[in-house]
Length: 201
Length: 208
Image 1: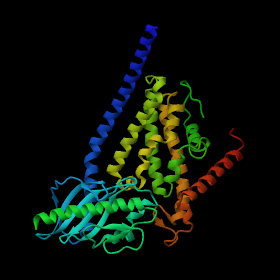
Image 2 (image 1 turned 45 degrees about the vertical axis):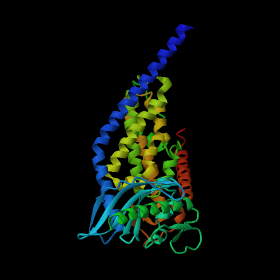
Image 3 (image 1 turned 90 degrees about the vertical axis):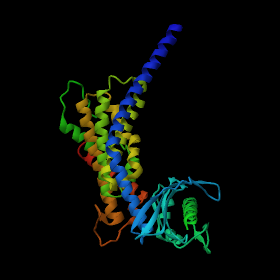
């Protein structure tokens, strides 16, 4: 009895060690490939960010990374919105606004968004850098008709299913969850911009 | 399926015929339907997906065949999945770094190669029982079979669904039958191809 349980134990240890060994070797190889590709991937992502910054703030000719220490923003309905980066947009020597990168949580994970906001606190433009919302439904938030609604809005924007009033945007029917997530992200960006603009002017 | 015993001479032509026609993973074995339907909306996606899957097939078949005597029977599936996942992560990183456009358009379907049943099926039914060289060859021919099947479906769907081929406009910017770009059209095209392959196989006078 004791002997057989000991044998079982040995068997168990042997199986676990084999699997650990295989996993360890595989992990080491993946780490090697990662070490080779990581700089290239991060360079490409930086290019992508630079393009998005230019898109949401076309008048700017330079961007300065701003050290934002406020952490994440709490939305009105109690969701935490991560702030991934803040840039100050420059035209010549003058600061003309800020760009805020936020990633609200949508239906299929984070919707990485960049919002360009001028010194008056009005949205210049918004852009979605990456998302994985449902194809054909949630990813409609990338459409121009939806995104262009945000231009010129300021303060705190609310969403509605019917005809939008002042400082309201119309959510996409069938994609309410994705629309609202994006909206929360934009509002968080507006809050960050207000903090920065308020603190320095 | 060719039974390759350790002593038998490798018949390369037989491997190719097996992987591409007689046991085509997609049209005959009906494996890997999910990536077939999802990534066959354009020929370029299909070729990218096929190449990535072929790379993983060759590498995982080779690795599993080399390790086939060291992997205990009881944990073989777990070991195979770890090995396959490792290669998939590598190709995913390489694609993100060097062909980002393709990596973006294939998106989630590259990591999902891990659970592509063609790869696990070849590991279990071939690589775990055969020597490394035939196993790698099996991976290559099955990968080519998958790529050809995917490309056939994708070419028809891209021409009919989007009116383009490899991105070039064919009918002046109009899409003749846009249903073929949608999942329903994917099933239709796939069904016709399966029927065609069955017809050709049966006409050839019963390979089986």
